Image (cartoon, rainbow, N blue to C red):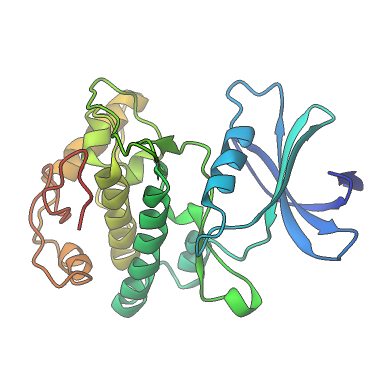
Amino acid sequence: MDHVVGGKFKLGRKIGCGSFGELYLGVNIQSGEEVAVKLESVRTRHPQLQYESKIYMILQGGTGVPNLKWFGVESDYNIMAIDLLGPSLEDLFNYCNRKFSLKTCLMLADQLINRVEYTHSRGFLHCDLKPDNFLMGLERKANQVYIIDFGLAKKYRDLQTHRHIPYRENKNLIGTARYASVNTHLGVEQSRRDDLESIGYILMYFLRGSLPWQGLKAGNKKQKYDRISEKKMLTPIENPSGNAIAATSGEKPRRTSGTWLDAKGSGMDEKAE
């Protein structure tokens, strides 16, 4: 694609696509800097890009948060330019024959938790944490993990009053079922503890090579989600992967919401320690 957006970003080859739209390599024609340019049709049923750009603006300056270069609407597209980043953790996982060492998982755990805690400190939940949404940096930042894709992020408290959103039930599952918390499956309003539970499942996935609820068969999506939820609740805390993850805090894991994950019994409006 030979097209300039925002007056200075020339679009190159497509480097990704998904339900959100398409991702292109871009070059700043003034500085030569390479960027990632995300395009979303303004006619899409549930537009997310403008909202996502606002989240990036709020998170600017945080370690492991891409810099927002530009957002605008041109030629029937919502367009956002951010830092160009490296491979996702899912890409690296596949490159490493779908198994990370305990040392690698512990090093990743430190960065993943820090990224999520920073997001929470700015008043937002991510709500769709998965290996595809954590990318490595490039060049001098090649060892730094970045958090991306805030299209489903949700404000959980007011930054001025610190008032937390109320407890609710019968909520639809949003995000990715494989890494969703048990409470999310049960329709409970998400809070900080749910993002942290998702991090636990990601680390379990990296240690084991797969999760016990992958590949479950069902007649429809709801039945599949129910089976995944049931399997999560039945997964014993004695699972060695769970113990390895708990080692990040030096504590023995204990059951929370029926899972192996140690979330220290956090209430909905509490910060998990």
